[in-house]
Image (cartoon, rainbow, N blue to C red; front, top):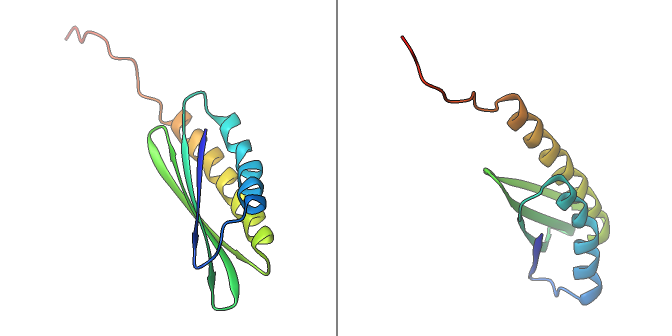
Length: 105
């Protein structure tokens, strides 16, 4: 799993980057294949804001979160992304394609 962390008007310190990677590593347990996550940290009207896009097999999932501190916003974002990934996997399993075979009509 590859995680890219960017800052928008915020400096991404090594501690913040490590915290993001630690929190989002749990998404990797849901997939056998490679997935990428792009995380943007920023400030919006005195609130810490985190935005993430996860490229998972078959779809791109997007989540945003805000909080009093950057760490709180990252925690909320990690929970949201985890729920989105689980929901995506459940949908994918329900709508699994039927096996293709010969139609002998």
